[in-house]
Amino acid sequence: MSEHRASCRCGQLHAVASGDPVRVSACHCLNCQKRSGSAFAVQARWPSDKVTIAGDAHVFRKVGDSGNWATFHFCPSCGSDLYFTNGGPSVHPAVADSLAIPLGAFDDPHFLTPQFSIFESRKHKWLEVTGDGIHHD
Image (cartoon, rainbow, N blue to C red):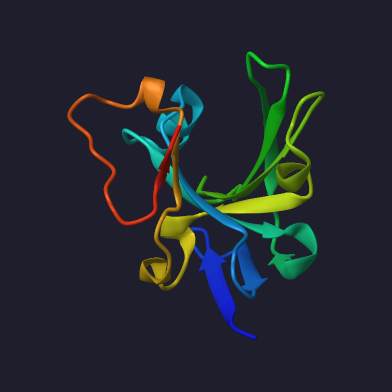
């Protein structure tokens, strides 16, 4: 089984994800834009039991318009988000028991390609997400 290592910028907080992710998505929501400091964010999701986390983390929870929330776990030293979880009254069951890691946090960020481009109503007009088999929402 393959292992994928991710860490914050200073290396204090890190994760090891086992196997293949269940979903890889490019998200254009305003929260992901603010979180990444860019026009979108790309993250990969694994079932929570397939990821091991080590190091100290601080937590920030953001509630969206839907009433669902995302709980972000970030390094208290360098401020990097290393992973987040989702929950709430209408969160999809597959997402509720998963953990998402930003693609750029991986030691090898090139091993994944997004399967989904979501919240495209918030996508910058100059941006185009292309590739075979990408679902656009």
